[in-house]
Image (cartoon, rainbow, N blue to C red):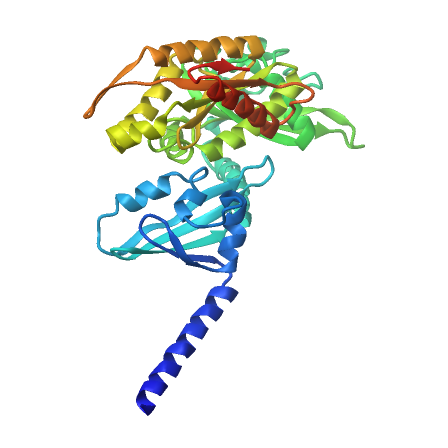
Length: 425
């Protein structure tokens, strides 16, 4: 009897120690089933997930994170080992913002055939520090590479070239007579120019003191190359604004690797659409750019009609094929400067720069009709699908990414409520 009592007390002590650890832990800790049903979590997990989970609370970790990390459920379901690490350091962007995002690092451990342990760590400060380090490292490292990869020049206060040196001719092939008095558009590849890239670069430099952009440029002989262009403000000795200094750098050799890395970091793994985190980062910049330039900007929300029915009757593989096909068909109606992003589940958003409300409605209707006419071959047979769409455009009252999404989402649900397979704006 005494032995049993000692064992019981030992177990109670261990349980108390575990609870104490869970409560005081500086990271979020959850225990769940393989399907995500939570049976134990600590206060920090609740704090991190409650804004996403809503009034129902954190009952299923995958449901709570479905709008920001829909891939987690697939990562777990595709992990076939009896136990082991499903993912380590998987980054989840919770609240995209122009200056700083809230980012979590997620680790998932499969303990046995019915239990997962998940940890969530707020790494927002680390991510911000990494971003600045990468930007600074890129340019500091470049200083020590072959000077033939660089051109140095200056612009006057109006943004036109007012100095020339041999580094420009070595990199671009342009002589002094070709560039003096020209803007930076002189160096851009003709098929990679929009009306407000150069003015925007100058405007951001005036706001921030310096600014870097990446784009395709073209040498005098017609050869294209990937370039980074750093523009910084020049001042007189008395501090008065005098113009701009420019460093033009050829980064073609690293662009292939960089492009693949960018694709992995910014693309939805299933559909090939832009992922949610990168969309918000890009959308904030696009809104600010539209405000500066005075050009219109429109968003279109797209939602697959009766998508749950597709999954329930034809299976998840058919559902995945439907989502992929929606993206492919939508892209046929978009320009190169337009964006389609997957915000979560079966919900997508189009970002249409330089497009007013009437133009957005036309594009949305064209996409709706194209998808309605589509027939998708699956193992369960041929599927016909439709989508509902809601449009919103930037105005004085609808002046932020959040405003645009809210108005477009409201229009989307009007389309749903009035029969689906419709466009509302």
